[in-house]
Image (cartoon, rainbow, N blue to C red; front, top):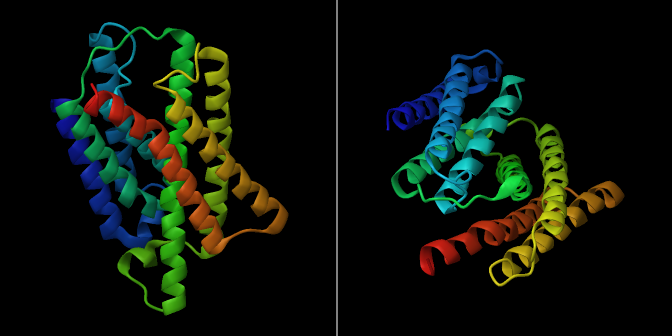
Length: 260
């Protein structure tokens, strides 16, 4: 509990400093960066400690997977923010990571079966893909907020923290590209390493993941071929992200929490 409590406090302190410092938080060596980095390390250490104490493989159950995605989002945010880019993302990623870590601590911790290195590779690739594309969904919402603020000439404290539209849009498509590559690797390792990809418990997950992959791929093709941007990019990003959320966590919630 001590590790969790310290990580939660550090996440929230980092978020508070980001909010208080405003535009000055774009400096790569702000005090919030050290707090966020320490929180990410403690978050990862907690998962490693639980995995070491649990027989079988790493815990990949519902709340554990949620916490790992939150960890991935916080880690990627810290890497980007360390370069002085889009520190406002930490205002979403760090509190979310803290909330998911707390949920895992309170409701997680179930024995895990031994997956073997092939299925573990597939699972870790999937979690990293989900974390990356979850960040793209947050960036899409930020892009929408920034567009609306510019159109209405009404800027909130949060919208003032966001970078110019062009920079935000560029980062969005870079994130989608990275996530699309990871999602492609997830589907490929699923085909190669999962014995029955269309088994009863995997069919919905597989279909929804492929649909999400197709939407993200269409968006990237449209961006390259026809210069898609703005509302269309935001809409397709959110649709693909929702499909991916349902694919993994929707099926996990149904199997583990509802039907046990």
